[in-house]
Image 1 (tube, rainbow, N blue to C red):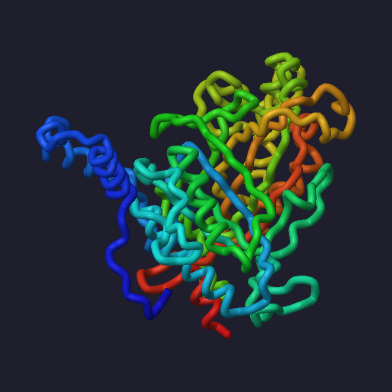
Image 2: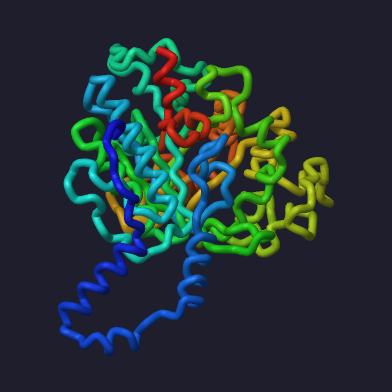
Length: 431
């Protein structure tokens, strides 16, 4: 908290060394015995360099975790604010900023902040594993149940709309919405979960967990595209995160404002359960026509290489389109949506078996896996991004036979944070 002087924060590595030292003392080892296990300085230096390479910067013009190359794991959470006091909201945002900056920099969450235990400890000894924490604001932060709890209603962005009810949605209330969102991404699942766990407990009495979703994506090389649980490559047509002009056009909010959202983005989360049992019984040709791509290579139907352009005018010997009219890639392609693109950052999920959630026909029976795709996408404006694209997909996509959207939400992710600021400060200071 401001106004309090503290010493340097202990890193997870230093905590481990301290614990190891106590263990040596407790074991009663002679002084000479401990020296035999000494780590040579050059080894220590190499280990420190390795840990430094696993740090993603927290401070900056944009929030990390948006155009950051995707890590292998995510743990994403949405929270409901239960305190109507503006000072409580500001306090939590300050603590979250400090804790996020510390955890992403290989330090403990936030020493000296209640509760008394400074860190739950399950990430002790683990490097930061490229941890990023991306914060978002839901519509409930601005107005909820007809109440402007924090005096922010007038500053709700026009683009932060209520998502429409799409054809086929079976959204579960407890898996949908939220006033605040935090997405933790890391190369190790325990690091991602640990980060969310700390932020949730620091918000005790002010905000409570509404829903959470873990996800994973296979580690691939820099020029490879990961596969989803349906066995197809996912993300081939993404705009390049290295293309600054494309990111400015499609991802980052610009002068259209409001000012506090400049340099920010809008994230849509969708928890999509897939009827994998039925999908696995489909012939390969049917699966490929459903996606509009070859399963093995990822190439568009009628082409040979994954990144070959779609030829939506190509017809077969029978006169039918090579890529069917209802194929997923045709309906989602920029050329089919007035050039619109979104930055997809999806993860697969597998939450075990669940026989309680039914599907509309024809798959009422025989679904066991509670598994699928945790779809995540960032865009400059969801009205011309996700909503425009998915309105068409929800009606005509052949994949709809196998997928059910069960939860998610839309959140405004403000721009990045400079040292000395806190997440959302520009919004708070507008009132």
